[in-house]
Length: 146
Image (cartoon, rainbow, N blue to C red):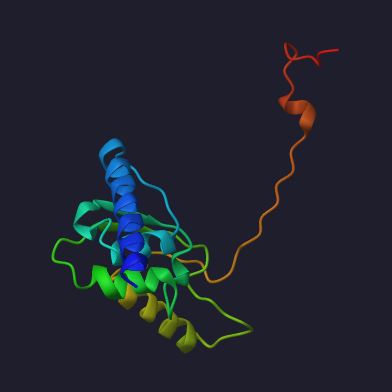
């Protein structure tokens, strides 16, 4: 048992040194939310070391998703919170039609978990097609290379 623990500690120290090297050599780190969560849980990285978190697909930050866990386990407990810029094309995750109350509830949950305010959203896409005459935009100086 002692040997196993020693190997585990040695491996953790190697990983810690890798993280320290990455943090020292780079101003920007890009990773999946699960990798960030694991790094925070193992104290390889502290949230106070982060100035800005850019989160894509932010609508996943509910339930047991790593984004939600990062926020609940670390962000909300931190005194020195990083700024967060979150993006999503769909702040409301729906299967089938939802009432406006359901949409508001989901938006409210997302705002609470992510400690944010959703600024703008479009509930449905507005499709617009424009057609142009291709000859109008052709330049006589541009010719196909043969």
